[in-house]
Image 1 (cartoon, helix red, strand yellow):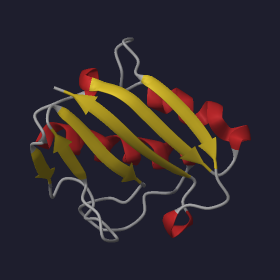
Image 2: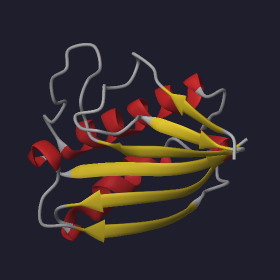
Image 3: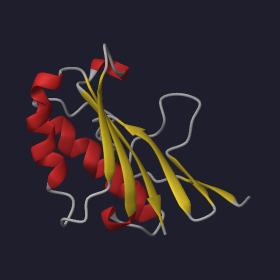
Image 4: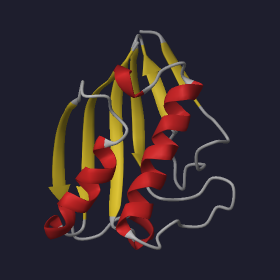
Length: 126
């Protein structure tokens, strides 16, 4: 199997022993992104909308580094700490797609890294 690590300075560096993304053949597996601003290294968590936008911007930077965009995404996973606020995340998330939405699941969790409210991972195919 062909395996290639994808790394960009336009998304946050991993905060543990993992990579931003890995191509396995033509499939790109993107690690969960939390709302860390890659320039400052600080959390962009003034609001849940800001957190979600930052997650999506980080994912977009990784997709671009791999030569892809959101139209290549076939699966997303959204982890949130409060399902009652899902509509706020969903509104922002939907802005990044042109209508050809990927498969997706949303899971409420007790906590996320750095105690953020949202984390999003993706799988894309070239």
